[in-house]
Amino acid sequence: MIKFDFYIANKFFLTAVFSLFVFVLIFVSIDLMEKLDNFIDSNSSNETIFRYYINFIPEIIKLMTPIAMLLSSLFTTGKMSTSNELTAMKASGLSLYRFMMPILIISMLVSLFSVYFNGWIVPIANREKSTIERSIDAVTLENARSDVFMQEGPKSILSMVTFDNALKRGNNISFVKFKDSTRLSINERIDANYILYDTLNFSWTMYDCKIRNLETGEFYRLKEKNIGSLSFAPKDIVVKVDRPDEMVYDELKEYVNRQKQSGNLVTRWIVDFYGKVSFPFSSFIVVLFGVPFSFVKRQGGLALQFGLAISISFIYLGCTKVIQVVGYNGDLDPLLTAWLPNIIFLFAGIINIVRVKK
Image 1 (tube, rainbow, N blue to C red):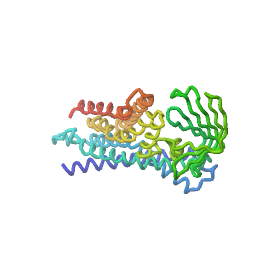
Image 2 (image 1 turned 60 degrees about the horizontal axis):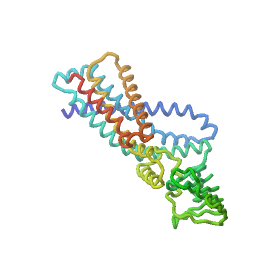
Image 3 (image 1 turned 180 degrees about the vertical axis):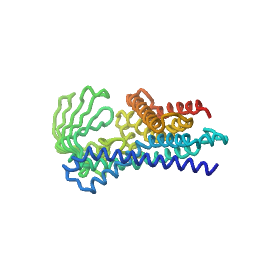
Image 4 (image 1 turned 60 degrees about the vertical axis):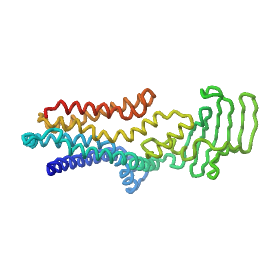
């Protein structure tokens, strides 16, 4: 049976790799057609375009791996059923469970590798891709941010018109302190020309300050005012506008912890954090649909199997998005939100296997 396992595994793996290659080729071709004008207008070099798509490919692989695994399971099993290979195997006493074993092992290995791939390689590639996009579109560079709002605990908000991470300097500052956590009534407001971060003492100092106390009506000016160590550092301001898919696991976890300390709502970020681990296992779960469906000979051929793969993929992704919205609103536990689509489809896949004639 070892030769049989290698035979099935080889067919399944090569089909999955080929499917993934085709998806990457299609996505890159379509995206290139859409962005061709931007590349020409910005006089982008061939090297820039090449680096852009090299860093785009990991994101495509991340999204398309579950679909490629589903297609591979359908095509591999379907071809063997059409050529009567499965009929001969069934006649020799082979069960559906035994047939699925090498496919499930490969699917699980792919899922485990995807946890690392999606958590570290993809975010770094996405970050580099975004940097290239900003340079092509002539948008703010990596070290600069505009219209920054940072919450300091439940009662204070610090805003900056611009922030330069290279200089650790924010310009046109407003530091508003509220009476309570509802933030409906202002207690004190400090406006400053700029603010600097002291990398040695880890503290912030505001310069050319105008201070107003709304309770007493007092108003005065200070040349400089040290407001001490806040719950965020310059790197957090830069990360603030980044997306979860541009942060590796450790960065996202640290960011969530800092936002908790600041009193911000972090439900959305926690859902995305758990989602980085849960989504890779969809590659394993979708196989539970593909193999049993094609294990029984059906009419329709490859067209039916391709249509089925796309349908299941859209249903899975749609279910994931709907449940995510519920989780983002805080109506579901973040961990359950991230894993619920997998749990639903896992049970559906098991039911699918049980119903197939072995």
